[in-house]
Image (cartoon, rainbow, N blue to C red; front, side, top):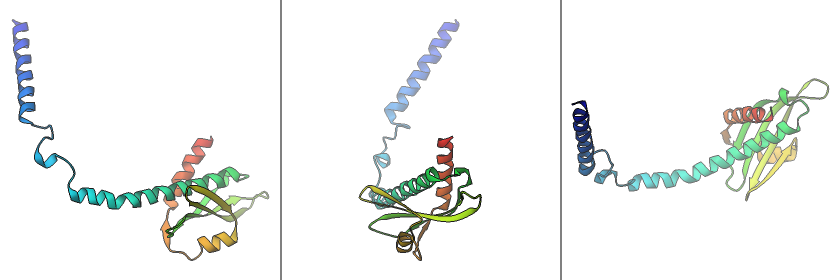
Length: 159
């Protein structure tokens, strides 16, 4: 008796599922769900270059912070003051100001610039000429929050 009831319930469940599939319920086969609209495609195409540029900026910033951290005498003393990305269409530039402990135990304010053009990365620590040319008095984007995140990742990877 119990086997008959279980069999009937099972058949009813299967038939219900099949009828839902045949009618297209919940399968996304309605005409409105056939694909993204032209507006959505246009919006995605407009944001793609900005996303790629943002990713490049983050990669260069990560590289600068990693180079600074790996070259410090006392990496645990490393504190970011600012991370700045100046507006530049030809070269991706990341300007980092930071504090670090020197050999005598005092804290120094230092700066470094990372640049990337055509896939190559150049790191310039404490070079006033490059800092003044690429970073000083420039408009751009503040990436200190990302810089702090990158520093935490670098510290975690080095331990």
